[in-house]
Image (cartoon, rainbow, N blue to C red):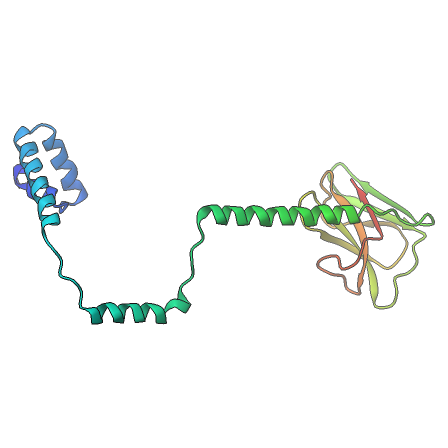
Length: 201
C-alpha cells in the first residue's frame, strides 16, 4: 500500500506499530501528507466535540446507582501512596522499638553466684559455658538465643543446667546479643520469658 494512502488510518490511530513507524518516516519527508494529516486531525477534533450525546433515561441512572450501592461491601478503598509509605514507616519504627526494648531487657546481669562465658571463634562458631545455674524446673528447659542487630531472636540450643561448654547452632554475627531464657520443655520459637543472662558479642 502506498504510504500516502495511510494518512487517514494514521489520524485514527488504526495502524499497527510497524506501519505507524514506517508512515512516520514517510511523514518526515512528505509535505503533502503533513498538510493532509493536519486537516484530518482538525476534522476529527471538531467531530468529537460537535456530537451531543443523548441524556440517559432516569430509570437507567437509578438502576446503576442501586447496583453500585448493592456492591459497596465488596469495594476496597485504595490508599494513597503517601499513606502507604507512612504506614510502612510506622510499622518499621514499631519493629525497631520492639528490638530496642528487647535489647534493653536483655542487659540484665546474672546473679553473682552464676558464671556465664560465651566464646566466639573467628568463623562465628560459638560456645556457652555456665556454672552455678540450678537445674531447670520440671517441664522447663534453658534455651540459648542469638539476636543479630535489627533482627528477631534465633534459637541456638537447649540445656538443662550448668554446662562446661555447649556449642551454639549456626554462627554468631558481630555485635549480636547472646541470651538465655527459661522455656517450656522442647524449647520455643521465640523467647517467652525475661532473659536470665545476656551479653553482646
